[in-house]
Amino acid sequence: MKKIIKDLSEKDFEKYILNNKKYVLVDFWAVWCAPCKVLSIVLKDIFNEYNNKLDIIKLDIEKNSNITKKYSIQSVPTLILFKNNKILSKNIGSCSKEKLKIFLNQHIK
Image 1 (cartoon, rainbow, N blue to C red):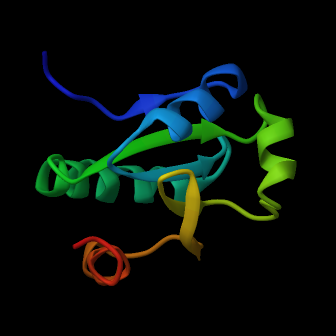
Image 2 (image 1 turned 180 degrees about the horizontal axis):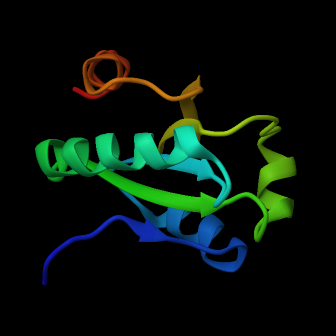
């Protein structure tokens, strides 16, 4: 089965983060957000490069307000990197592939 970047809802989010043994990068985004669309292309490239070490999920902030509030998301795009249900780091705003790789490589062994 081919792995893909998943869109999750609030009901799946906690279970997915809790049960995942890999690093999980969560992209908090919105349909109306132009930088989110640019970042989405970067994430597809990153996903292909890191797919053995990293899962990437997307969470629409407008459809999932409880999770958005829980993690204090105030602007999009926001990326949060999790491992074993713990936040390792957060990146706010769009970024280049190179910047995102630096962000990830600081934490992914």
